[in-house]
Image (cartoon, rainbow, N blue to C red):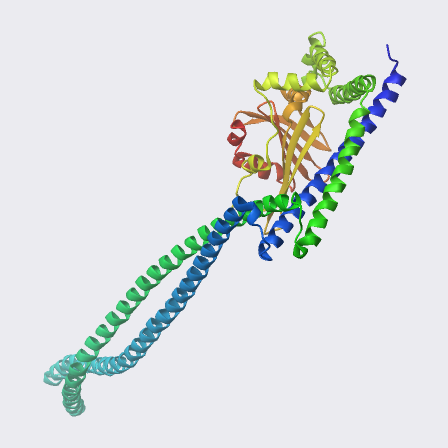
Length: 525
């Protein structure tokens, strides 16, 4: 039976071997990549230099077909690009023509409208004068009746009658002048009315012409935009086909490079490229030999010690996590009838649960993964960046800031997380992190238990409580000193979602964000 010291001594030897093996394996992959690139470069140089490759008839035929396909695609792309440029030029020319025609009609209408407005203003002035004269004549008639009645009154003196006679004479003179001026205005207005009618008709016709030009211009633009969009789609499809053809051509170049390298004779035009391939191959063989040596160094005793060492390390970490959870429970503020009274009143059930989880986790990484997959009811693969991004909401007035995706593996455990920020024009920010605990999701059990206890704290420093939104338990926290608000969610026994912001009403803002998270996307994983 190996002691703890021996386990760590032998385990570290295996760890060092595995680390060296991983480093050399990565180096081999790089060398392999360089070798592949050199083969492709060799094949391409041989093809472009028109080296005699008739001995490799199958590859020669494939490259010939690929080259013809690429030439056809590039010629088609050039033709499509010319058609697009011609269409854009024609669109501009037609648009300019319609705009010039519209401007010409608008200038004509402006001139007609100016003359028409002049006639209307003159007519309105005459109508105003005639209206004023008509009103004054009515006043004169009433005044004459009053003066005549006073003159006929027996109580009126001769001196008063003389004065009344003079007033009546003045009224008669004014009346004659008003009637004469009204008649003159009426005669002056007749030609104005006759002149306005054709001007109004001409203005209406010009307006219809302008509207017709606008309609034709709009129709032309729609048709031209549709044509240009079709050409853009054709160019896009051509580009995709060209990329695929170039990819296929590179594969054929690589095959040709392999054929040439295996041949007996080397054309002087490609000697440099052949030498580069052979050098890369030699380097690969050297690294492969190192890998073989490290594989042969594998020792069963050291491998067993390494596994035991990792179980001890991981078990210790899990125990630390469990201890931290217990400290959170034990150090929470105690009051009469606190939420923890029930927790410890049932023979320490919660503490026993934490201890049991820690014991299970000490079984090793495989035990954690097995427990996680048992809870999830399926094999677990950590979520991809694309999958986690689907959870992030698009919110008007807020811009997503540079999402950062991380994927971590440790032995049999695999997790993933996506961290991003939202920024508003007024300077407000919200940080969001979505974590997939993956094959380590069994470790969330202690946290779920804390959620279930509905701890509630409200003192001079912090407000913290467990609430429920959309049927999901949420831990709310607000630091009264630095104004930092936090929402924490455990979803589907696997995902951790955390939202943070700094604002007086930060919790209200985070609840709005939480309501917009598309957690249903996580159900599909």
